[in-house]
Amino acid sequence: MNILDNIMKIIVPRDKIAEKVKELGQRISRDYADKELVVIGVLKGGFIFLADLAREVTIPVIIDFMAVSSYCHSKNTSGVVKIIKDTDISIEGRHVLIVEDIIDSGLTLNNLKELLHTRGPLSVKICTMLDKPSRRKVYVEVNYKGFEIPDEFVVGYGLDYSDKYRNLPDVVVLSPDK
Ligand code: IMP
Ligand code: MG
Image: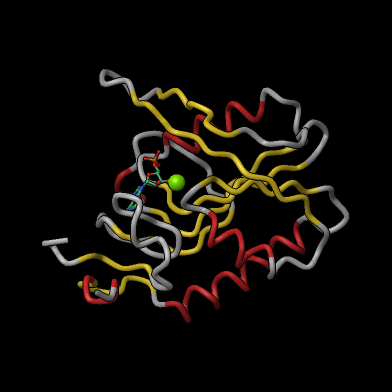
């Protein structure tokens, strides 16, 4: 069976992604020229975006990863971020750019950003490939953004459904029976 058989529609095709990633890489290279930048990829969803983005960045950067999961308390919008994998390097006195696959409610990044701020970085900014603004529960400042998409569950380019479909090169919506 081919995973391409399960696609209902393509939301962002690979060529548009490549164009946008190049543009973001150039902006980041300009904005952080002469600064010490740590790029933190959020696992697992951000791995493909980070791999592509890193190769469009033309300044020296330190790359690290975190894996987190967010738990939202039912009565309010505050969440707690649980660290599954922390960075190996220190971010103290360095500029940090978090690279994420998608911002949905905003809880994950809001909490992660707050946590990283307690560690003495010079700045913490956010770069996301996808953004679903209609789903936001908490405000998050997004500094670099690939695409805004409608409120649909998407997979591909790092994003999963039940841990599958991350390897699709396009961002797609699956057929309803998948
Ligand atoms: P947030 O805390 O609600 O912003 O959650 C963001 C996380 O939820 C992302 O890092 C994804 O792992 C997951 N997520 C949100 N929307 C989608 C989607 O459409 N497809 C796959 N994963 C999603
Ligand atoms: Mg994620």
